[in-house]
Image (cartoon, rainbow, N blue to C red; front, side, top):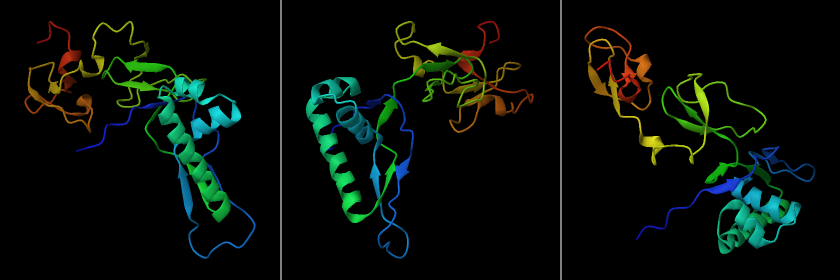
Length: 194
């Protein structure tokens, strides 16, 4: 029996630093040991210990249940204590989180992405590099599953040649085997082209 999948935890902003290193004392020879503090653990510490939220309020902010928040909080405190007592460095990274920031949609490939730095507006798509991006609001999206609205077929707009889309490559970087034109994602073509 497999465990239930983890829900994404909401994090307001990425931390301003990526970790701490101990100094002083007798350092052990070789590579220093590390404690990895996940981003959701950092966020729980920030909300409960820095912002002084109670567990119920912090759980609502992070979009998790109160018992889940309490487990994350307990793990985070144990990791911090381990690092302080044993002299390990703390690295803040990882975890199953999403940042509470603006979401954007690429009109070129349909990719949805966010920008963790709230003050910076992205200029191009993180996947295909296209600069035709718009602010994404799931409430205004007519398709209930907008992320799957683009087909897995690359097509030639000149001759109609089709091939299966390779997810590691952009369609426009592929050439038609028949006429040599650049390929496009099938759903991106105007209805009159095919």
